[in-house]
Length: 113
Image (tube, rainbow, N blue to C red; front, side, top):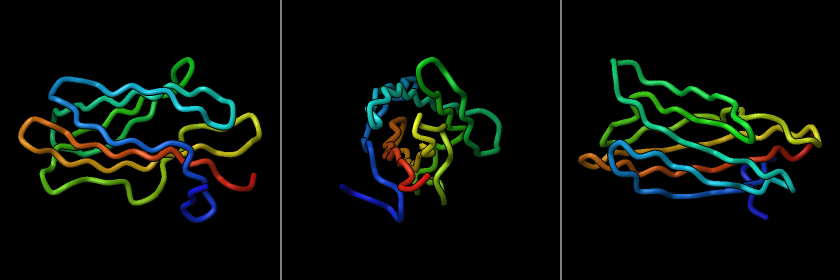
């Protein structure tokens, strides 16, 4: 088992994403099948993160995450709760080379509810 603090890493992935494409994957989180979609939107000047619930998972929208030197969350963002009551969160980092995004993502399940 791999952990960060008291959180178990239940999924990790690394993706090279051409401009205009989205990432989609399924993660098994202690018997809970979670579909995660990650979409990049580049408009305006503010950088941000939006998390939208879907059935059966979550859509993560990365707003203006297009820096060639990189962008990352400084702390886990909450995605939802497992039936056990434990919280599921995400850590993300991304950098852009030309028109290609390099995304690293980890899903974390808290250790104690």
